Length: 466
Image 1 (spheres, rainbow, N blue to C red):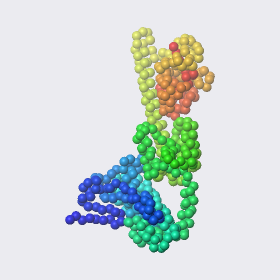
Image 2 (image 1 turned 180 degrees about the vertical axis):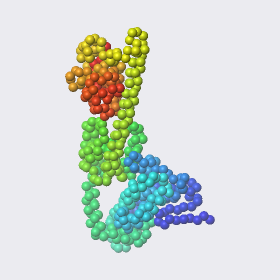
Image 3 (image 1 turned 30 degrees about the vertical axis):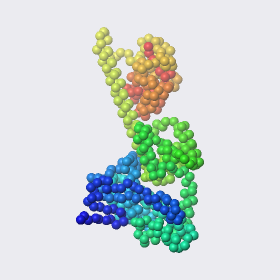
Image 4 (image 1 turned 135 degrees about the horizontal axis):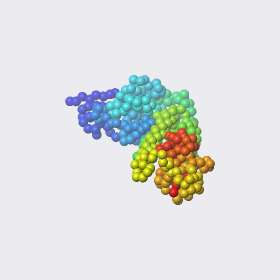
C-alpha cells in the first residue's frame, strides 16, 4: 500500500497516483458560497478561493508569462494568483500582526511550495512576496469586517460564539483564531478601523476590473489589437469604464482625461509619470505605486522603461536613416559611374555640374528664374523630380539639392509623418552646411549631416527643375 505524506496546514498531499495525470494534479479554482454569519446564515456571500494544490513534478510545472513591467499575464496568470492566495492563507499564521513580522523562513517556505507548481525566474521573487503580503492582508481584512459585524450587533454570548465558530476558516487552529478575534474586537482595533474607513471613503475613483487587474487588461487589449499600444491614461480609462451603475466622480474624470488626450499632440519622446496626462488630472503619484499600471510598479521603474523604449526607437530610426542614406549614395555612385563611361567627349569627367543645377546661366536658380517650376504649385511636382531646397526662413537662398523621394502625407521621415505641407527630399548636395532644418531631426545636427539621407521640407520652399 502506498504511503501518503502530508504537509501540515498547507493542504498539500502527494502520492504516486497524484502525479500520473495532470487532471489530478490541480483542481480548478472555485469560490465557496458560504452563509454570512452576521446575517443569521440567510445570505450567500463570496467566500475564499479554494484550490487543491498538489506538486506535479519537475516535468509538469507550468511556466508563467510576464510583461515588460514584471507582472504575470497570459493563460496561467489567474490560476497562478489563486495559488499564491491559497498557499499564503494556509501557511502563514493569522494572528501575526503584519506581513513584515512574518519571518523569512515562512515566506521562503511558501515560495518553495509555489515553485513545485510553477516555473518562475528568481528575479520575480520580490514581486511575488509582495503579492503574498497583499493577498494575506486582504483575506484578514475580509475576516475582520465579518467579525466586527458579529460582535458589534446585540446578541447573546452563545449566539455570538456560534457565529464566530461558523466564520472560522477550517485550516486555522482554534488558538490562532481566538487570538485574532480578540485583537479585532478590541477598542484599539476599532479606532484603527474607523480611521481606515474614513480614508477609504475618500477613494471615490473605483475601478471595474474585478480580479483582472491592469496587467491582464492591457495584455488582452494587445492581443485583440495587434500593434496598438495604450498610454497610462487610456489604460486607466478602460479600467474604470462603467457598464451599469454610474459613478459621477469616475465619469467626470474620464471626460477630463479624454479631453486632454484629444488635445495632446503626438509626442516625440517619453513623458515622465509626474508630467503625463493622468498625473495632471488625478494629481501626483504617491511613492511606491503608479495608478493605471497595477501592482509592483513604481514611478522610477516606469520612467526608466519609457526612457529605454525611447532610446531604442531613436536607435532604430538612426539605423533606418543610415540604410536609406547608403541606398541613396549607392544610387549617386551608380549614376556617376554611368555618366563617366558613357559615349561622347565627356567620358570620365567627374567634374560635371552638380545634380539638379539648371543650365540656364542663372547660377543657383532663385524662385521664378530660368526653366524651373516652383514647388508652391504642388500639382506640378512628382517623385524623382530634381529639386533645390530653399531657406524656409524666407531668404530664398538655396540650402541643398536633391530629388523628391515621397509626397504622400502619411509617409514617414525618421519615424514621423510628412503631413500635408511637406515632401520627403533625398539630399544629394549641401549648399549651406549650417542651414536650419524645418523639423527637428534627432539623427542630424547640421544640413551637412543629412547628405545621403532624407529630410522633410515644406512644399512651398521646394524648387524643381524642368
